[in-house]
Length: 466
Image (cartoon, rainbow, N blue to C red; front, side):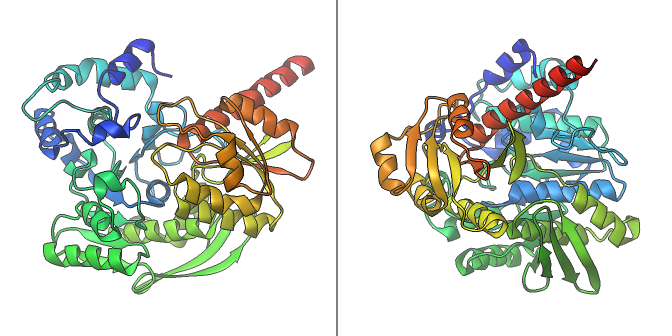
C-alpha cells in the first residue's frame, strides 16, 4: 500500500468518485489535461494506445486487450478504474513471458516506490501549478491519469490500453489519440452528468472517436445508441466494425470454469477459443477486444491462434464472477452495479447452479438504481444480508424497505461488511452459495477479508507443520 504521505497528497485533490454530488458543480475542462500534458512533453503521444468507453464491460474488454497484446510479445500498459483494494491496481504493466504466482493476484501493478517517486517528486511541481488556475484545479482522477501517461512513457511500453472513467468527451483519458477505439454496450448510468437518454450518453462516449485515422469496434447496442455512434464515426470519417455484423462469433459451449467460442472477421477465423471467465457477456467482451486487436492489423506480429488462445486463457479480472472459498463455503464476488449487469450476473448464476436460491450479501452506492436491482435479485435470494461499504457513497436502506423488495426472503441488515460476511458464513448450509455484489467498494472490502483470512490460515498451517 502507499505510504501515508503519498496517499495524503493524492487525497488532497478533489475526488468525484467519492462524492458525485460535487460533480454537478465541477469545472470539468479537457483543456486542463491538455495543458498539463504539454508541460510534461505529451507523454501520452509517445506510445501506441487503444481506448475503450461504454457503460457495461469496458473494464473487462480492456483486460482482454491487454492480455492478448502481452501474449503476442508486447509490453503493455493497462489503465482502469476504480480499484478494489489499492489505488496502484489502476496503473499496471503486463510483461511478456510473465505470469502471476498467485492466481488471484492483480498482476503488474506499479510499485509503491515508482508510484511515490513519480507522484511526489517528478510530477509534483507540475501538479502544484494546477492547484488554482483559470481552468480550475486538478481532480484525483486527472492526477492518476497523468501519472499513468507519464509512467507508461517512462517504462517504454509498446501499447497502452485506457478505460474511460466517466463518459468520454470530457474524460481525462480523452487527451490520447488512440489507433483503435472500442464502444461497449451503453446503458442509462450517471444520467445527471451524461444525459437522460441512451442517445445522449452514446454521444458523450463516442467523443473518444476523433478522426479518420482511427478504427472503431462497436459492441452490440440498442438501435438508438448504435445510430448515434455510427453517425459520429461517419462525421469524423472513422472506419467502424460492429459486433454481430462484420464481426461475428459463435458460442460453442459453456462449462462451469470457462466459455468456448469461435471468432470470424473478414478472412480471419479463430476456432474453439476459451476464456476462464464465467458468463456469456464475457464472451461478448472478449469478442469486442479481439475485434480491436484485429483492427490494429498486427497479424504478422504474433497474432496466431496459439497466442490469441494464450492471451484469452490468461486473462484474469478480480471481482468479475470470481470464486473464492472461506471456511469451506463458496463465495462469488461480482462488481455488478447496474440493472443490466445484475441481469448478467443472475443469468450466469442460473446457468451454473440452476434456480437454487443463494445467500446475497448486498450493498449499493446511493446514485444507483437500487430498487430495480433488488427486484431482479429477489427471486434468486433465500437470504439477503444488507450492508454498507466504508465509503461516503454507500447507501443505507431501512429493513422495512428491504422486506418490501425481497418478499419471501429472509432479510437482515448489518453495520459493515465484516459483520455481513460473518452472518453469511454462519447462515450457510453445505450446498449454499454466497454472492457478494452491488458495489465495487463492497466487493473490494469482502475480497480483501477473504484473501487475508486465507493467507492467515495458510501461514498457520505452515507453522503447525514446520
